[in-house]
Amino acid sequence: MADPRVTILKRDGDQSAEFSNYEDARISSVAGDLIMIRADLVEQILLKDSVDIFIMPGVSISFSSDDTIVDNDLNYDDPVNCNIYGLGVIKNTGSGSCIRVKNPGSKLTVECDYIQNVNGVAVNISPSLKFHLKCNYVYSQNLQAIRIGNFAAAGMVNEVKLDVIKVETGVVNSPSTGTTALSTRGNGFVRIDEIICNNLGHCLSHQEGTITARIKKMTSIMNRSGGNVSTVHLAANQGSTGQKLILYFDEINCLNGATNNALCGIECTIGTGIFIGRRVYSEIISSLDGAAIQIGNANTKGFVKCDEIVSKNNSALVLNEFTNEILVIANYIEGNKTGDGGVIFSFDGANFMLKNSTVKNVNSGSSVKGIGLFKGTNNPNVKLKNVKIISNGSTIFYNISSPNIEVTNYNLFVNDPIGSNVDLLIGIKNEMDPDYNFLYIEDPDL
Image (cartoon, rainbow, N blue to C red; front, side):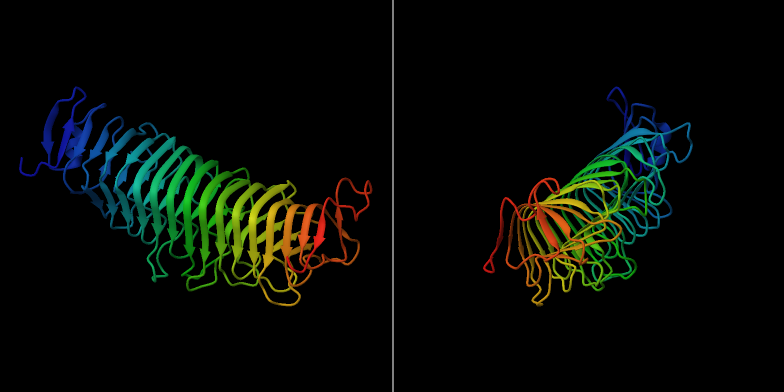
C-alpha cells in the first residue's frame, strides 16, 4: 500500500490489512478490534461502538470542517462505548471541537498528549453516561477548553473523571480571545495542576451535580470587558439549585488585566461549596466587587478553610443572606476597604462562625472598619472564636444605632474598640451578662 497510516489489530492479536485513512479501517473493523493510528491524519474520526483507538506518541489528528473526534451523533439506538489510548495530539483548526460527544448513551475514555483548538470548544461533552480524560494540556484559543454537560441548560454527564496537567483559554494581550476554561454539569472527580483564563471567563464554573476537585492553581486575568465574572463560580444564574463543589486548591488568583470586570476569586451563591486551600487573592478595583471570596443567598451551604484570604483593593470576604451556618477558618484575612464595609462585609441574615483568624484592614484611612455588619430584613448571625481584628476605625461596625447587634464571642483581640452598639455574648441571650466573655482584649499595639 502506498501510504499505510492506519492498522487494525484484531481481537485475536493478529494484524490485519493496513489502510491509508481512518474511515476505511473503521468500516473494516468489528467489535473488540483496536485501530492503531501510526501517522498524522487530517480527517474526522467517527467513533465505532466497542472499537478502541490507539494513537502513536507524537501523531497528530487534525480536522477543520467539523468536529475532529465525534461519537455516533444523535442516533439514540447506537451510542458508543470505547477508549482512545496513546500519547497523540488532537487538533481542530476550524470551528468544531477536538472531541465531541453528543449521544446521551455514550461512554468515552480518552488518553492523549495534548488537545488544541482554535474557534470551537476543545472538549465538548453533551449529557452522556461517562467521560474520562487523561491529558497533559487542553487549550482553546477562542472558546471554552472543557465543557462537561450542557452549558446554559440542565443536562449532566453521569460519570466524570478529568486528570489534566494544564488547561488554558485565550491569548495573552489579545482580549477578544478565550472564555471560561472549565464548566461542569456532572458527577465525578477533577484533578488539574493549573487552569489559566487569559481573558473574560471563569477558570471553573460548576453548574449541576457533585464534583470533587483538586486543582492546584487557578488564575483569571480580565483582559476583556463584558460582565463581572469570578475565577471560581458556583452561582444561581445557571444550573440547578442543588449543585455541590468540593474544591481542594493551593492558589486562586483573580487579576485585573486590562479591565476591572471581575467579581471575585470564589463566588458561591447557590448549592453547597466546600473550599479548602492555601490562598485566595483578588486585585480587582471596583466600588462593589473585588472580594477574594463572596458567599450569599438564603439556602447556600458551605465551609471555608484557607490560610490566606486577601483582597488588594476591597473587602476580602463578603457574606450575605444565607441561613445555614458557614464556618470560615482562615489564618489571615486582609482587605483594603474604605468606609464602613470592612475587611469582612456581612449583610442581612448571613449566619457564620469565624475561627482562628487575624483580620486586618491595611487602608490608612482614619475611619476604616475591620468587620462591617449590616442589617437588611434580618441581622447577620455572627460567632467569633479566637479572632484578632486590626483596623484604624471601629474593629466591629454595625450600621444600625438601635437596637444593638449581638455577636457571640470566644476570645477576641482588637487594636481599637468595637462599635458601641455591638454586644459581645456567650451563651443564650439574657442567661449571662452581655459584658461577660471568655476573653476580650483591646490593645493598640496589636
